[in-house]
Amino acid sequence: MKKRLLQELDDLLQSVEFTHNAFQHVFQHAGSGMTLTDENGTILEVNPAFSAVTGYTHNEAIGKNPNILRSFYHDNKFYDDLWEKIKTIGYFESKIWNRRKTGEAYPEILTIQRIINPKTNTTYYLAVFSELHTLGSNIEAIDLSYYDALTQIANRTLLQEHLKDTTCNIQRATAKKENSHFGTYKLILFFLDINKFKMVNDIYGHFIGDKVLIEFVTRLKKLLRQTDLIARCGGDEFVIASLVSEPKKDASTLCARIHKTLEKTCHINGKKIHIDTSIGISEFGKDSSNIEELLNDADKAMYFSKKHNKPCMFYSDLSETEKRYNPYGK
Image (cartoon, rainbow, N blue to C red; front, side, top):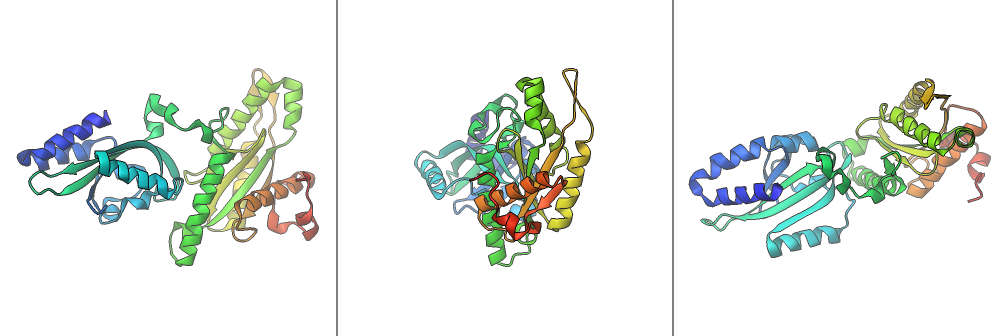
C-alpha cells in the first residue's frame, strides 16, 4: 500500500498543475507519518500523523534533520547502507527503531523514496512510516528476538539496547549541559523478583505459573508511563527502567504503587493466588555508569530487600559489607 502511495505522489509531482493541491491533500490526510526533506536532509514539511507519533510539532521539526528521531539502536553502517541504497535505486524500505521526543524508542516500518522534479532537476526525499503496533496483522514483523514470548514485553537483549541508548543520551546531554529531557532527568532501574514463585509452580504447575507471570506484568504495565520500559530478564525476574526527576521520592512512590496493585488476590483457573515482589533500585551515575554493573547493583539491592523483608531497597542504602557481598556466587 505504501509503495502505491509513494508512486502516486511521485506521479503527481511530475504534473506541475496538480503538484501543490494534490500532494498537500494526500500529505495532510495520510494515516502514516510523512516527512519531505531537501537533498541535504533538511525537513521541509511534516504531516499531522508525524507529530502524533513522534511528539514533535510541525514548527519543532521544520528545518531540522530527521536524525532527531535516531534511536541509536542501529550503527553507522546501517545508515550508510540505507543512503547507498537510496542513491543507487532511489528507494528504501525496512523495519527500523526510531525515538520519540520523550526519548521512548519504538519500532516502525519506514519507506524513503527519492523524488526528482523534472523541470528544475531538484531532488527531494519523501519518508513514510507506520508504527508497528498500529499495523494489525503486521505485528509479527517485530523482531521477536527482542521480546519475551510469554509476556510480550521486552527481554534482556532489548533492555540492554534501551539502556545503551538512554545512557548515551544522558551522557551527551550532561556534557553539553543541555536543559533537555535527558539532561534534567535521572535513570533508575527497578529489579523485581516475585516472592515464592517456585512454590506456585511446584503446587499448581507451570501452566498456572505462566498465568501468574502474565497477570503480574499486566498489573505493572498499568502503572508505567510510555517512557518507562519493563523487561523480563529471567524466569520471575523483571527490570523497569525509568527516567525521573527525584530518584528517591519517585522510586519510593512507584514501589508503593506496585505493592498496592499486587495486594488484590489473583483468580486463575479457580485458584486464588497472592502475588508479592521484592524490589531493588539502582541509579545511573550515582551507583554506576556501567550498564551491567547498574543491573547487578539493582539485583543485589533486591536480594537484600527480600532478605530483610522490606518493600524495596536502594543500592546506595546498602552497607559496605552488603555491597561487597556476592549472593549468587557470580
